[in-house]
Image 1: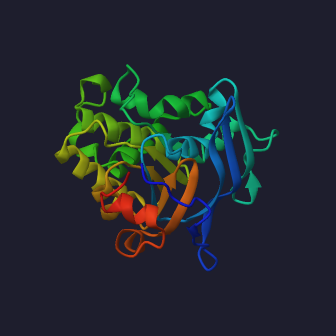
Image 2: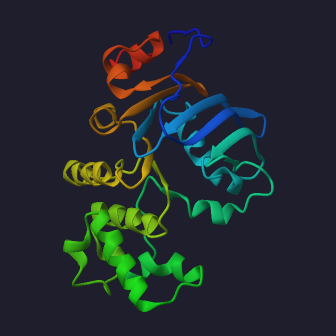
Image 3: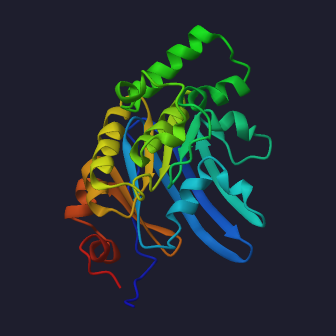
Length: 267
């Protein structure tokens, strides 16, 4: 495999933009294995940012760190800052469950609860003590509309979520995440298990959602990254090698490793 100079980086700063979330010198260890090696990135509000790179480069680990999902993995250590609205959410005194109401996550494979469509959306709200039926009804309708699923399921909200197609289940998971009204939505390869038609609908949904949410998505699909994202970060061997507007990453990358990867000449 071709070797690259990992000291050469091109990471833009969003100095004149509204930044929703950023990391400063973030490191993640799984035991003795350092999976993320000092990543500092900023994410603009109401934009879509794609994280790309070869398998095992750390992009999913980095994404999971942004709402501390790596806390669930034994023998994991995270150092550095994760700044959300001026607060370091990596600090010990942060209420992780409260924080995740503001930074929601959708996983690689659809994982609806084995409950009705309606109960999938309202489950977390009820867990937080919200039981007003009028409010819950309103949130269900709004969330499903935002996830482009309302027209397909509005007459069958009592139906099991498991009876939906894969693409519908993934959009339900998005609706479930945004029902909590987060500011930021993290998505880990949300289209990897979907057919091309469902993938297209999902991408259209995300483009519509960015007016209300800041979206950070891990994807292996270069065409998807170029279609939907405003910014793209290229990860390699635990480092963020290049971060710029998506147009520049795909047409005028500054780093050789990035150019080789996006052009299909990697390795």
